[in-house]
Length: 401
Image (cartoon, rainbow, N blue to C red; front, side, top):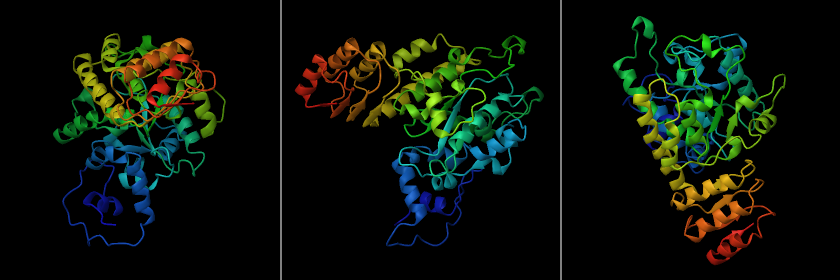
C-alpha cells in the first residue's frame, strides 16, 4: 500500500484531538509496500468507504475535537459538569487515528453529533443534568463492543473552541476564532452525513424552569429553536432512521442496551421527511435564535450546501418504518421531483403508513423523470400493486417490491 501523507500521519497517531494543527515535521521513513494491508489500513479503508474522509479536514486541523463517549460516561457518573473545550483534559477526546481504529461496523462511522438546547446563555448545562442523560444513552450504545467499540461525540461546548469567560472578558484567541469558524462550516456535514449518529435531546431535564433564566437567555423549546431545527433537518436528509435518535423519548427507570435504545428513540418514526432548501428557509423564519442576525443566514447557506451534497451523492435512501403517511410521501415526492437525487438507485419506504394518495404523488414525480437512476422501489406488500406506481415502474423499468 502506498500511503499518502495524511494516511502516514494517521498510522503514526499524529493527529491530536487538541487545539494544535498538524505541522510539517518529518514523517519518518517512507511507506513500505506490503503484500497485504495491515489491520489499521483495513480500518482506514472502511472509514473512508463510509465517507470518513469528509470529516478528516476539521478533525485533523483541530477545528473540531470529538469527546470520548466512555469519558463522558465516567465524568457523568462522577457527578461532573462539562467544561468548555479549552478546559477539558486530553483524555476527554478521541483523536482521528483512534476514530479510524474504532471503525468496525459495516454501516456507520463511530461518530455521534449531539443536538440539544442550551439551558443558559453562558453554559449549556450548568448542573450536569443533560450530561447525565446523554451519558445514559451513550452507555447503551456502547453496551455491545463488537457493535460500537468506541464512539466519538461532537458536543459543541466541548468540541468547538468557546469564549472561556465572557462575563470577565476572556474570549477566544485569534487562532481559536479561525478554527471555530472552520468548525462551524463543517456542522452541516457532521449532522447530515449518512453514516454518523445524531442524538437529539428534545426535552428539558427535570427541574429546568425557563421562566427562571437570566435575561437574554433563549428559553424556547427544542423544536422552536433555530439551531436545533437545523440539526434535526440535517439529520433528516439521507440518514437511515436508526441513526437519528430522539433521546427525549427515553423512559425513566429503564436500563437500555443498544437495541432497546434504538427502538424507543425511533418510535412513531422520530423524524420528518427531508425539506427542500426553500421550504427549510421559510420554516426557519418561525424559529428562535439567540443571535439570529448572524446565525440565520449562516444556517440557510449550510443547510442548502448539505442538502445538495448528500442528495447529490446518495445511491440508497432508507426511509423504512418511520411512520410516514400520505403527506410525508408527497413531501418526499416534491424533493425527488426537484432533481435532488440524480444517482439514487434504491428507495426503501417499507413499513410506513403511506396510502393511495401518497403513492400517486410518488408515481407522478417518477413519471416526470424524478430519480432518473432509480432501479428498485420498496413500498411493501400493501402498495406494490397500486396502479399508478405499477404503471410508471413498468414504464421506467423500476423493480417495485
